[in-house]
Image 1 (cartoon, helix red, strand yellow):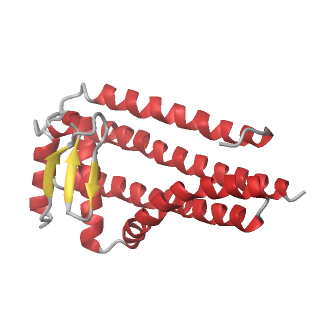
Image 2 (image 1 turned 180 degrees about the horizontal axis):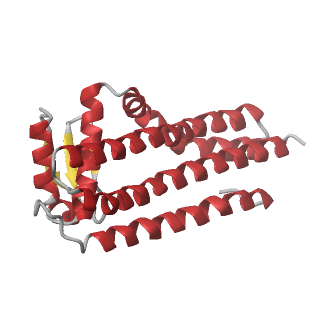
Length: 226
């Protein structure tokens, strides 16, 4: 939003985001061509895992496009992209199990997931209000508005940071349940792990960008005082 020398702080984060995006798409595409030995689709694997772990979850196709997979804790529903919902590959099973990992987190009362869910409305509000307050604070030379904008943006940063353990734990659960329930063989574990590790980098990149942007906004606010 603000063009000044501090924008250079964002370059490492943006480069990491680009690399993470290419990595996850490339890795998913690679293992989407590797059939799972079980022959199950992502939706079928998710249903099998839900049944074996006593979870009552809905499993629906997502209409958000490629890699739009997510778990909605408010409705207890897995929404899987077409490539995952219908796919019978290692990539499809890995992503479906990852989303089932979130369902297990909810069933287990996993605290970081509850915290992230509680932060969702505040993170959205923070992102929407932050830059307007910062711009108004700079134009009107009002320090309270500047720091209010930073405080609101901090909520979005906190959301990004809390997301990291939630996603890492879901991937770890996915690996455990896929292997323990016999949906993938030992020789298939490295492929699934590669897909989930690549996806994890997108969350790391998002957190890095958020933290760097917060640091930049603080520097801008301090510079306006001089």
